[in-house]
Amino acid sequence: MTITTGDSVTLEYTGRLDDETVFDTSREAVAEEAGLAEAQPDREYTPLTVDVGAQQVIEGMEEGLIGMEAGETTTLTIPPEKAYGERNEENVQEFDTDELREMLGGQTPEEGAYLEAQNGQPGEIIHSGEEVVRVDFNPQLAGETLTFDIEIVDVN
Image 1 (cartoon, rainbow, N blue to C red):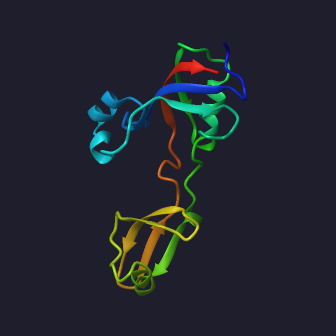
Image 2 (cartoon, rainbow, N blue to C red):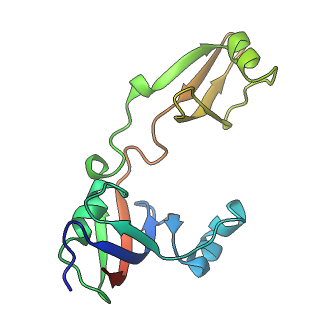
């Protein structure tokens, strides 16, 4: 059965960056080899089921699934505009260090730490100074070309 919009598709996947770094996978053995399993010890690595057309995955993956069949494998290369978009400097915001420390319950903001904005958007602290803290609210994979190895397990 050829995949079309509206189908429920179960797939195994491994996502890589241009430098071959694995950033996500549904396969436990790949996660262990890439060191992802240590970072997310409670995660279960199982096939992903998505409804094609429901925007549950990035645009480039949805487009790549259409026309495939159960049992088929492929590699999709997805440019930033069909994934998480380009990096945007407008998504880097500055906060007064004292105000942010107060919002964090007295905790001093540290570079590399993550926080969540009031709208739920995650951000990484990229600079923590005496006066100003800069937080990058760009998606972590913004600006990246992503490569996915896909295996279609089932189509309904």
